[in-house]
Image (cartoon, rainbow, N blue to C red; front, top):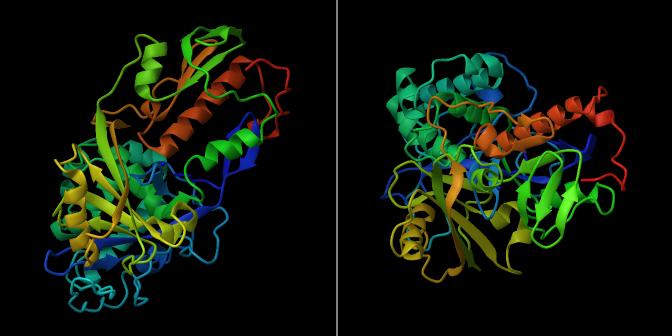
Length: 438
């Protein structure tokens, strides 16, 4: 589901990731004003503390979108035609977050293509509330990770209240945003993990990989020597020196790294802990008359239906939609309701302020084990080296985010190189020979 940094490291070499497309964030509130909400602009402008641009290295992820895990972006090439400026969140009127009061929105009638403008009182509150939130997020973006990890650990929802954040700011923006980033609508996640997610958001924004999540592994695989990657091979057992497959027998090797989800890893490595999971359902609709919200991720701050967040993904990446049509992807967190498509359509009609009865349903994907739960106390650095020659990585070894999975993979590869006696920096190491065992 996202890409986050301009480069990823694999097989000791640095290779580019696919271009990322950016999303605006819009918090919607008010059942009588469909589509009403506030958008965010540049966090550094809003801070009022003179802070300038910062390093965009991210520490955590994300939300669930059309087959992707979307999340905070770390920069990289940004196409000019369908992206917001790096680190910027724009109101359609050009208002800056923490600047002049957002203008009142006109009423919207069903079927109207007009996108109502933000009210100064909802969901982010007035200019003072917005400035305070902007300043807080700006400071958070510059806070060292180790300092965040030293904070007292509480469930995220309790921590927000304990820090004196106004209830209207929590309920109107932070709660729906964190629910989207963590796939946890009740905010039972460790406050440390939530702080990492907000830090990443404040330092980078949200993006989707152009062409879909599958583009990232394809780009990574394309940079490796021919014959290095084999797909469609079912592994039945692993050891420190071999991998047993269902179709190809036993393959001998110098080391094994299990890079799978938590359940699959536990099947191959008995004794590995299997966490609880957050359920996620993604519903894809297509229409030839999309709402005029543009490349915005709409967050439902009222929790007035099953949809936690939704976006017209084709406004971000046109390649994902059928020719001549728009793709609307919406995420339901937790157990889906009965007749999920009907319930989602009704909620989307209120969020977008337009009829949805003629929208075509492309797919409904429910994943019962989508995201590992991170209740406190949560170990963000679970061991990746089980034995010399046997390693494991994934979001279940770090934070339950794409960035967490990537970070655990980096830790595992560093452990492998250390066990092999490699001393050179990973991005300067020689390519793996084509004849070397996997």
